[in-house]
Image (tube, rainbow, N blue to C red; front, side, top):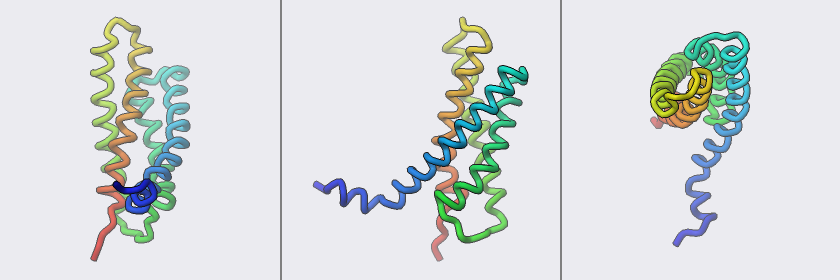
Length: 145
């Protein structure tokens, strides 16, 4: 049986990426939720516009923070921002596209404002998981020569 230390050493890089991604994500999520909540609840923008604007702003922050802090990208490949944008768009559309109809079905008797806010929280959760793996495996993947 491996010790905790041996397991940590074996998966150290992955564990540190998850921790750093989480730290960036906490800041990004709090900022994103405030923006989304203000746009939806105070400015009365719809579900897609509120979440879309929030994710666009958060994505700019996330790109810079995750490339430097989480995945320590030194290669300034000109395709990197495009891969990042594709990842964000795919994760956003998938996460929020699944969250809204699912929550609408589960909370059908609730007012629209409750349904949309719960769907935005669920969408954020789904997005976080998909986005981590998209960034790790597609955007900032290590290319071995």
